[in-house]
Image (spheres, rainbow, N blue to C red):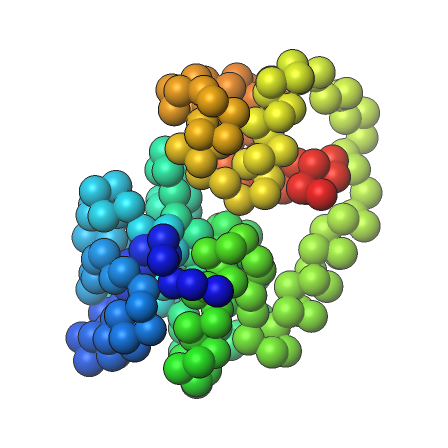
Length: 219
């Protein structure tokens, strides 16, 4: 897959590691559009840098990588997030995935494994260090098997356009990509998403994606 169109932001508080990762990505042909040593800077520069993939460490000096992931995904045109962490602990992996991370690699991964992960995450694939994929799948199955709350109200009907937008959100497209696909304005897409969130009583894009997947709209 060509690296064209893949814009990466690297977020890590260790300067040598951050620079090494950025250098490997740049040498592979990716556009490294920003680097940050803390979460606040990452969240601040992302809207202008417009990365399509954010490579985020979990341990940052001001906030966790999980919180950075949540904030990046709450933006109007969010990147996909690939966590690159020294930790392979089950709790860290699941928290990152629940926050909306598309991939999770441990820092012992090789250079080619990282480059492949960035390409695949950019394309919308879920990518995990070998051994972690089964853990994440098992957790999703456990959540899916949990009994539904008693007397859960029937979900309200969405308009055909809202359903169409929701289907593209579930496939991982950003608002601008959806607007281009459906020949709508960016603002109109945002309005459809906000209306859908309100109807479904959901709070953010991550919850919306999970709802769409549960409804089989990501096929």
